[in-house]
Image 1 (tube, helix red, strand yellow):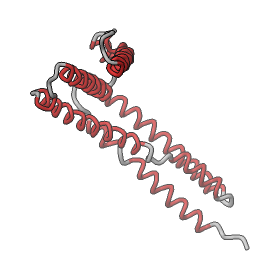
Image 2 (tube, rainbow, N blue to C red; image 1 turned 180 degrees about the vertical axis):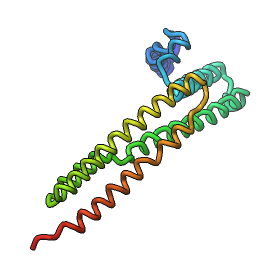
Image 3 (tube, helix red, strand yellow; image 1 turned 60 degrees about the horizontal axis):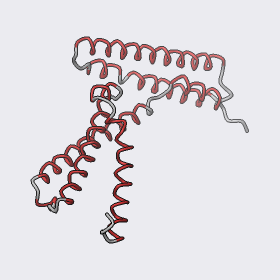
Image 4 (tube, helix red, strand yellow; image 1 turned 30 degrees about the vertical axis):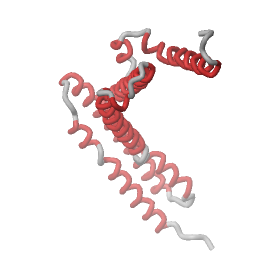
Length: 198
């Protein structure tokens, strides 16, 4: 290495440093079997992991080709890199769908919280109206618990059957809308009965 020019030496040292960093980053993957890695991850995370590892391997192979004086663009490997890009797009699309589903879950109406909010926001409610609000809140909580139990039971049945349980998901989706309508109707009625103070 003494006969090499200084700029080449510095580039080689930089490359060795980056390879050491890469080895450190890949150590968790290299020290475990694929089965051990898969056991810790859900399907989407597994797909992302395999995608990332494939991209790392592809980059290293391109680097290897360059060190051998072969242009990676002219190598048959480029077809495989195109496939990797397609898989990456699929995984990114799936990750975006999962994130969207998670954000949609937060759009559900919390009936109990809404009834507490209404009771606090409208202080001139009659005793009957307050009781009705409490009743709606309790019904909302019991319906949510019922839905959760149904979903948990559906998940258990799905695991046992090895299939999908779309019926359970569809049948539990619309009940919060009924509570929302009831709460909105109640709010409208309550506001109609409350006379503004002058």
